[in-house]
Every structure is written in C-alpha cells, then in structure tokens.
Length: 276
Length: 340
Image 1 (cartoon, rainbow over the protein chains, first blue to last red):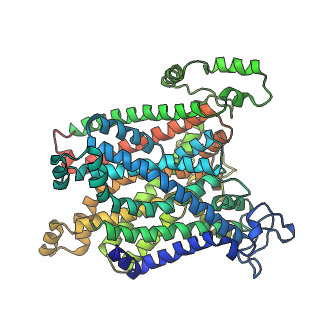
Image 2: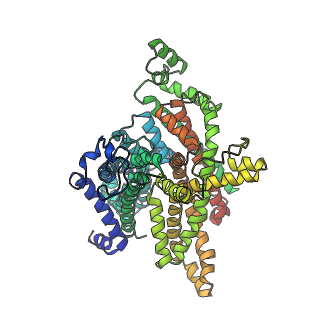
C-alpha cells in the first residue's frame, strides 16, 4: 500500500492524473461554493445573456438560454461521479461472485454461468445500455441500472480467469485438505488474490462509466433536463455549431479531463499492482 | 483440418450465444412495465382496440409460447412490423445496416493500420520520446467519447478548414443506384469513379472519429504485447546474431505480438458498433443509429429487439472472422491436428 502510494506520487503521469481526478472530485463536492452562478444548475432562463462567448463574466460562455457553462459543468461532475460510484458499487460484486463460483466450482455451473456472461458480452455495451434504457424510462436511476447490466460481466471474466489459475495453487489445496468450506475458500482464500486486479479495473472503469453515461445522455437517453449533464450539453451545443462552439467544446473537454485523469491513475496503478 | 473444426466449433458456440441474446432481449422487452399493445396504439385507443391488438401480437399467450412464436418467425426472417416506420423490421434493418457497416469496417481498418504500427514504434523506442508521445496520444484517444472526437474533427476539418464535407454519405448532386447499400461498392459497380471518390471523401472523417479510441486501444495493446515479446530469449538470440534493430522489431517482435492484439481488436469491434451510434448522429449518417434511437424513443419493441439482434450477430460474425485470421497466423493452431 505504501509502495503503491509512493509510486503513484513519484510518476509524473499519475500525479497529473491524481490532480485531474482531485479537481473533478473537488468541483463535485464543493459545487455550491465554487460555481459562479449556482442557480444556473437548474431550469433558469437568462435570455439577456444567452449565447455569449467566453468572457471575464462567463469564463466558458453561456448556453442558449443564458446559463453559465462553467457552472453547469461543475454541477454535471456531481452527476457523473455519482453515476460512477453507484455502478462501481453494484457491478463488481455481482461479477466477482459469478467469476469466483464459476471458476472454483467448475463443471456445469461454470458452463452455464460463463455462457450467461458471454451473452451479455456479445451485445455491444452501448447498445445493450441503449436497449435497456429504451425499454425503461429515461431517468438517472435507470441509466445506472442499464450501465450496471452491461458492466458486471467484465468483472466475471476477470475474476474467473484469476480463479482458474489460483485454484490449483498450494494454498487452496491446503485449505481443501483441512476441510475448509467452499465459500471460505472462494471468498477468504482466493478473493484476496483477485483484489489488486479488481481495484485496477475499477479505477480505469470509473472513467469509462462516465464516458458511457455521457454517451447515453448525448443520445437523449440518459439524465434528463434540466439536470446539468455533460453528454446532454454537448448534444444541445451541436445544434449551434460552428458559431457557438463553446457550448460543445467545453463540456466535451470536461468529459475528457475526467476520463483522462482516471485513466492516467489506473494505468500507473496497473503497473504497480499487476507487475506481470 | 483443425482450422475448419475450430471454425465450426466457434460457429456453433456463437449460434448458442445468439439464441441466448434473443432470449435475454425478448424477455426484457416483455417484462417491462406497460402494455406493448397500448404503447403501439397510443393513449387514445379504446380498450377493445387494445384487446384486439393483444390478440394479434399474441400477447395473451404465456411468455414461453410468445418466445417460441417469435423464434419461428425469426427463422423465416420475419422480425415483425416496426411501429416507427410501419414497415417490416427486417426491411428497415437491410436498409440501414450497410451504411453503418461501411463506417465500422473502414474504422476497423484504420484501427489496425494506424494502431498496430503506432504500438510497435512505441515498444521499439520504449522509454524514449516516441514511446512517451504515443502513450499520451493513445491514452487521450481512449479517454474521449466518440462523439467528442466527432465534434472536434468536424469543427477543425469541416467548418474551420473545409477539407471534408460536414454531413451525408455522398455529394447531393450525385445519384447512384442502390445495389448493396455499401456506397463504395455501389459506386464502383456503376463504374462511377467520381461518385466513388465523393463517397470515400464523405466517409473518411466519420470513420476516423469512430476509429480514434480503437486506434489508441490497439496501440496500447500492441505496445504491451510487443514489450513482452522483447523479453523472450529469441530476441536476445537475434540480437546476438547481430541483426539490425529494425529487422528484429519487424520480424521477431512485431509478428508474434500480432496474435493477441488481433483477438482483442476483434472484441473492440463491439465498441465500434456501439460508438457508431454516436458518430452517426454528428455526421447525420443514414445508418442504424437514427433508426435505433428513433425506435428506442418510440418504445418500438419489435424494432428494438431486431436492432439488438442484428448488431450482436454482426459482432459475433466479426469475431469468428478474427478467430479464423488468428488461427491462420498462429502456427501453433495451424499445425496442430487435434486442437479443439
């Protein structure tokens, strides 16, 4: 743990990543205090200042109804991070349980569980999420549900592959010989050895959840107005290209900043936690 | 021999998975709240009309029977009628799929042709500036959603410097008869080089926007695979023989790293198919996206099920092709007689 922290802080790439991620979290947590126009996060009309390019007053310009883009980006980070947290609290445990059971028990259980995850994996992630969103109502909660549905099989695959390798190791055999229960072996013996890989994947995935969530709302199937959301902001802005470029470019960059930050940290973390 | 057995095995497994996909999406479509018949008819329909529609759609049967009927129709190539377009879903898919496929295939081609060499350069100059440059660029490439790339590219290369057209598949002044739906093929078949050039010109920017994150992904993978290969004794041997670094990189390090990279690139095809939805919106590309989003907003169940099925089938077929390529490339599979 100490070593991981040391390497993260001594690598310039991960320091940049940590700074970016830190900024995003800071914005989300203290939005009410740092946003220049907190009331612009909701359904406010401010037509006198509509469609203004970046200026000292509105650093990143205003949108078609005159709301400050910077304010909306800051509040949109709340939605994005909330989405990431919820999906990554639900999806990994499901996937991990699937992977451990299929990998350790083997036989028919393995075959059936892994075919189920194959089915999910053979629908392109965004398409599955879109279809689920289409069948349900487009709300924040359902978007989380849809993204979780497409996310857990990747953890099942990951843990499955590790479990298959670990179950023939000496420490597992030793536990079996002294009569430890299957549940004990899976969750107390094998699982700890999967943790580094899971943590790395979760860091990288945080960025990708934000990316997919913004894609859903870009298509109009995610977070609904007037909630500030990066994907919807880009989508709205594209109607006013190229003249009002700031409406699209800044929310777009805001997505890149967040995802890039998580990727930088995740990348270095992978080198530390999974040296092979 | 073994390659064909392998191919057959993959085909069978894919078919099972596809049946699973059809069950999954069919059951999701049926368990959602709301009556599909009422959704289809709209809020002003009378109860009698709704009941009639339920009969017609077999909605009063048990769900297993409904699924059986659905599969029976599917085998005959019938996916039902789309409420969105009032046409058979199959007709719609046949119309929109080629435009999407054309985009995805060119993007896949770019991904391989640009991503793999970038990764190879990165690995060969590991730790030096070309490596760092490629690493940062490829990480940036995977960090932006396809629609952000699309917007950025349109702004820079279509609006500010008008090098490429902004929307559409071909210049408005050109008319080409539809044969396959693939613009590049249809224009060539008609012997119209001017139209072919126009179609290609329209295709490049959206395909590149779609390919970018894949290029980053491919470069990152190839880099790490090739670095692993560089640690093999065979490379040390080649260096001891005094072969040039360029030759070692090309012949001894790049080729073996191709195999794992290709497999993953096959899986990345899923991302291309999904992200095509995003890119098509920006470029007003008349592919599956507009149809897909349209049917989703309308809760057009038949069309949603059909769209998901056709995309999954495309993805599975792409992976079988990649698997075939890998087995041709990999001597361990090519020469083994009893490979499963």
